[in-house]
Image 1 (tube, rainbow, N blue to C red):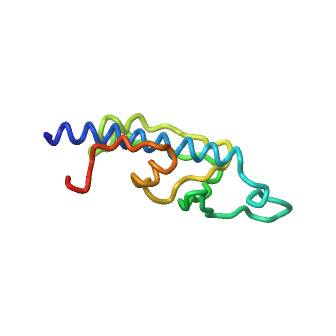
Image 2 (cartoon, rainbow, N blue to C red; image 1 turned 90 degrees about the vertical axis):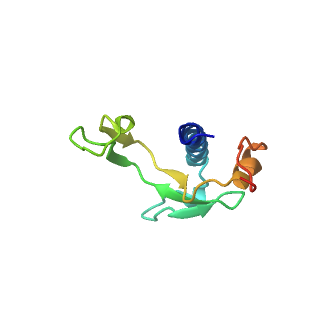
Length: 118
């Protein structure tokens, strides 16, 4: 496999995993147990563990700039344009990368072509 093919395959896999993390986080935010919700001055948990033991961190609502400025000489084209992102409600996001075992445990399949043998 050429370096270009490897990068292309990795980018597709990374996009799929990020979509899975986002979908999981959105589902968790919609189904957050009342014990994690704020009540009368109480702060929700900063981290929790899901049903398969993945550590998740609470991402608060707010705004931030995503991407690179046009003037950034080291920026790639896929990092532009810089734009404001608004998170309208808090959600939980995985703290660590999703392993193949975690992906398979959640989805029931392992689409990876990578193996221990390389």
